[in-house]
Length: 342
Image 1 (cartoon, helix red, strand yellow):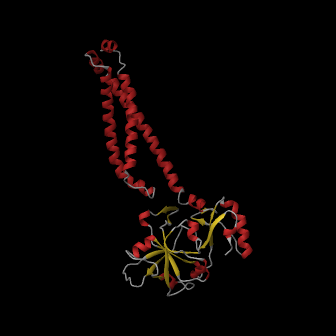
Image 2 (cartoon, rainbow, N blue to C red):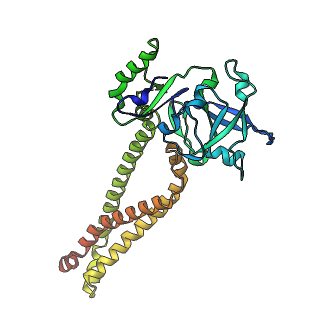
Image 3 (cartoon, rainbow, N blue to C red):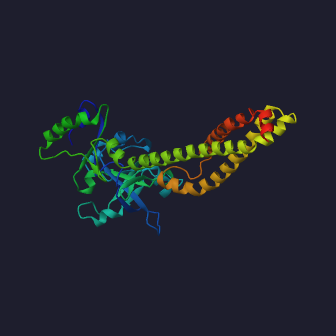
């Protein structure tokens, strides 16, 4: 592996199989002393020692993979917190053995091999795909994951990942020269995931993970904003019509000594009654539609009290504001003209 960390602008670098955070292969695992009937599906990450620093994973217990582990293809493993909690509840996994059963089915990998767990790191998400869109798993569905030295797979590392302090695009030519100085037959290409290509992980995720949710959010938000505006205009029109129908009634109340403040409060109460019923119907309808919304925006709860409270407050405020102008006009009724017309 070329010494990419010596390249100006590169903070950390790693070799791995595949694109980080995407398409992690899975395997059933066996742990001595822990028989089980169901498959213990576990994600596999084949990487070099710099993977954890590059991807921002933090050591919780034990140690990380080091250069000697990778160079000698030692049978050691680092696991994530989810694996430790699920397969070693209430136990210390450090020093325990784990076997990746899928390796026995691949000719180029090590067979019948047990790996010693040397460290535990925090959980991280892996992005999976539905059709052409990427959907991040919810935090509570984080899968158990095991990290192994990549030479154990028998496959040459086909990806380099780097954490940089400058624009990744500005380092492409430098990194290409550094790699080809070690092996000039290597061709550096940008990773492509579900049609999205980019030299930075941000570019790949922009075209896969965030593209659809952002478009969906804009579409839903535009429709919601238009519907909200139409509702306010409709409420204003209804209140104006109600005031026009109540001109005679307002005139009589004024003639009998009602104050204009009382007339204002009366019309605002009528508007508040309409707004209240509208909010109740909308709330009931929204509870049925939030499941659709949560399916379009992964990680968003179907029932978020804070969001509902904010939305209801906005609707109430805007609704009363829409009622205030017709209600104020009701207080400006000319008493003598109204009675004369009647």
